[in-house]
Structure formats: structure tokens, C-alpha cells
Length: 125
Image (cartoon, rainbow, N blue to C red; front, side):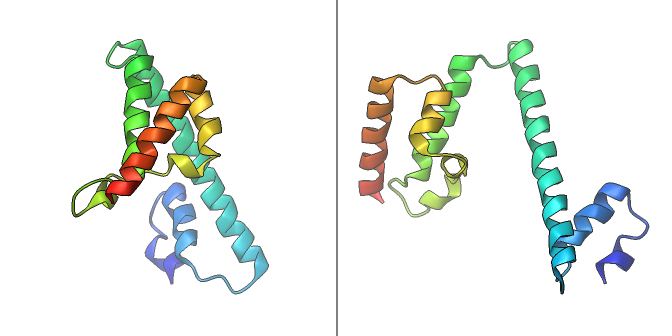
């Protein structure tokens, strides 16, 4: 079904259409995983490119970037209000949280402060 819908589209969209198929054999599941893998890798490349442009043009510096990431991670922990899930991100699922914080350049004290703030936010939800 999806093959007909996307037959006049670019090869990229045709590949993306495979994600909407309901595979009936392992070969098709493998094809879907390969498409998903390529999409994720391409998205990572795009994000890193945009991040570099923003830093090279002075729109954002590494300190501001770090603050934005930490704020996103804290929003994941919940907070006061009726809709804490609206600020949800997925950074903490890519690798263990402490390891990710270390990749951002945080030291032990900063990580401990983050964990304390995260625990506080979880109590608010």
C-alpha cells in the first residue's frame, strides 16, 4: 500500500515509507531497521551541523548550549503544573545520565547539584 502512495516521491521519502509497512518477514523488519538507522544517523549529522553553525556564527556559545541541555534534562524530571510532559526530551535515554553529564563537561560537584535539582523536580510532579 505505501509503495503506491510514495511511488512518485523522492528516493528518501520512498525509503521513509518503508517504516509504515507492517512487515511479515524478518527481511522486511531488517529493511525497516536499516531505514530507521539511516534516518537517525542523518538527523545526528544535521543536528551537529546546525550546532556548529550556531557556535561558529556566535549565535550560541558552549556555556549557553550546556545550560539549555541541562534545563531540558531537568524538565524531563517533571515539575509543578498540569502538563510537565510538554517539555519532555530524550537525552537521558541515550546513555546513562551521569555519563552524559560528563560528556557535557560537568565535574562531580556539578553532577551532584544536577542530581539534587532533578530529585527536587521529581517531588513536585
